[in-house]
Length: 420
Image 1 (spheres, rainbow, N blue to C red):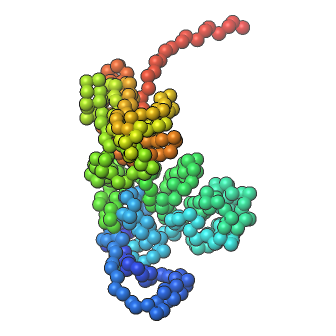
Image 2 (image 1 turned 30 degrees about the vertical axis):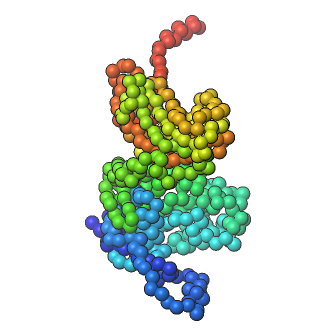
Image 3 (image 1 turned 60 degrees about the vertical axis):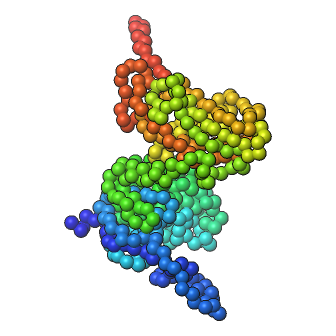
C-alpha cells in the first residue's frame, strides 16, 4: 500500500549546466551574484553534467535505508533532492511525513543566533510547535553536550560543537523521515557511537532513516537494505550485505594496479614501495592459511640511489568493510632501521597467522625520521583460507571478524565454605 511507503522516487534526474548557477530554488544573494557576473560578459554555451539519472527506489515507513557509493557517485545530490533543497530536473519524489535533514555541519543554523535560538529556529522550520520544541529542549542540549554554551552565538562554536548540536536537533525533533549524510566522520569516536545509537533508537520508534556513509560497518549494522550508486546511476538495491559486496568488488576491479605504477600515493618520495608478495614456510603463496606462518614481503627503492636512514614500516590490515583488524609496525615491534640499502626487501614475519578466513585489504606506510615517505592505501589484497588455528579441529563461526589469539582454559574448584 502507498501508505506504507515513506519515500517514493521515480525517474529522478538532476542536470547541472557547467559554469552556471542552477535554476530552481535560489537565495537572494545567489540571484544578485549571478546578475553581477553577467554584466558586460558574453553568454557562452557550456556543457551539461548529469549528477543523477533515472533513479528509482522506495523506502518503507519505519525502514533504515543505506545509500553507498564512491565520492562523486551522486549520494549527496540525491539527499538534497529528497530534502527539497534543490528540485529534480526529471522524475517525481513523494515524501509521506515531516523531513529532518542533516546534510552538512550546522545546516540551517544562523551564526549570529545562540544555540538556544537555533534550536527553536530549526524546530520551526521542521514545522514543530513551540511547545513541542520546549518539551524536547533539555534532551537536545544534554545529547549535544553544549549546556555551558547554549546561550552563546553558534559562530563561536567549534566544528565539533556545531556538529553535535545540529545532529541533536535533527534527531530529537521527531521528524517522520530523518536524512543523515556523511557527517559522522567529523565527530570523535565516542560521538559517532552516540549518533549511531540515536539513529537505532529513531528507527526503533518506527520512523524512517536514510543514511549515507563511507563507514560500511555502520551501514551494515544500521541498514537491513541499501542502494549502491555510481556515476549518478543506480547499480543495485537490496539486502545490505549483497550491496556492499558488489561495491567492494567494483573497487577491487579498479585498484588492481602494480605498486610502481600507482599515482594515488602520498609522502615525500624519499623511497617508494615497488612490489608486495606473500611467502609461507614453503615459499611464495597466493592464499595463506589461518594459523600458518606468513611473511609479507615489501620491495622498495630509494629515489636517489643512496642508503635510507631511520626508516620505519607499517602495514594496516583492513576488513572489506574498512575496519582495521591488524596493525603491524616495525618500530613498535622494537625493530629499528638506522640505515638500509637503497634497494631491497622488507620482510614482516607473522608467526601463526591470526586472521580468520576471509578477504582483507592492505595499506602500506614507509617513513624516514618519522615523516611519511610513501603511503599507499589499498596497496594489496590478502585472501586467507580457513585453517585450524587452535589445533582443535574446530572453527569459529563465519560471523567472527576479529583476530585470533592463543588461549587456554581451566577450571579451579572452589574451596568448601567455612563452617559457621
